[in-house]
Length: 352
Ligand SMILES: NC(=O)c1ccc[n+]([C@@H]2O[C@H](COP(=O)([O-])OP(=O)(O)OC[C@H]3O[C@@H](n4cnc5c(N)ncnc54)[C@H](O)[C@@H]3O)[C@@H](O)[C@H]2O)c1
Image (tube, rainbow, N blue to C red):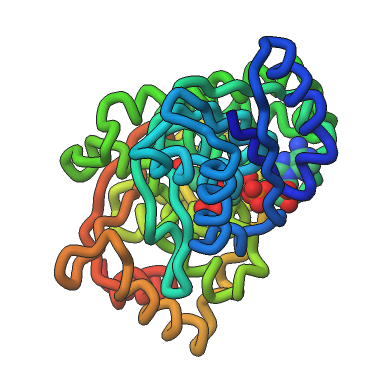
């Protein structure tokens, strides 16, 4: 079998993984790739596959992906392609990979022209999650996973949404009992959605495409920041944008006149006390994620945002299927042009 990890994770957990596999009399070939998004490329992919051929691996072998979403996506695609597909075991070690990237069967590499443009659906046979490995994950990476966990609550479960926020300090303290519970709930919510629509062929708003909540604007901000914003941080700002658009298209509640605002109160307010944007901002701030969307909406940035949005993968003609919320736990789909999205984000009277 191939044990694939990156230059950060292999020194931390590679030996333990190798020993536990060898204890089962399995022959292990280790491959270490450089840490970072740049590793999701054709060169690294074919180096891995060449290495698997040189190690005389066969169709009954297994790829074990030990690492964050980068390793999971790259090793997963190698498993999907080697000898027309061999089994894949995901052992995610970042919070984002545990709650999101390792679950759902999407594997991919990037091209210079864009992210995840070469990929496959290749479902793992096993996903093995150990919250203890999060003890070595930097806080900033942890926060990125929290953005995706909050997204799962926002889409499917008001209870999970509140629990993730309430557990913020315990999660940053790496309380493994709390982490185990929160991760399991988040994985369950995503897995239930994926199992209803494994290959993203469901009707707009009904299938796994709703998992793009916060990602339409998030991906654009990731690009506009030249990847200074990490994926989860960009998704956090994308969630603020989604909530603002949901309010300005009048499908989600707006705050009653005089009801404070983003800074009002503590914890997560009941619907009706706060508008959706304030609810999202407050939750994201409690999770130590960025919420200042307006700095990305100044003139020059706004026109760049509009042109990147106009090339969105999820557009049909000039319309973009924008995943919105009627309330926490209640997704909806809006059909908007890039110009409408930017103008509504900047100005409440943009185009309602
Ligand atoms: N396939 C999917 O459905 C899906 C979903 C979401 C994201 N993704 C992809 O996942 C990638 C992002 O994943 P990520 O945030 O895990 O990034 P990553 O894999 O780059 O990991 C983040 C950093 O943390 C390090 N790391 C991981 N686990 C660690 C640990 N336990 N201790 C110390 N350091 C550790 C890594 O070496 C890396 O430096 C992107 O390429 C994104 O496109 C895929």
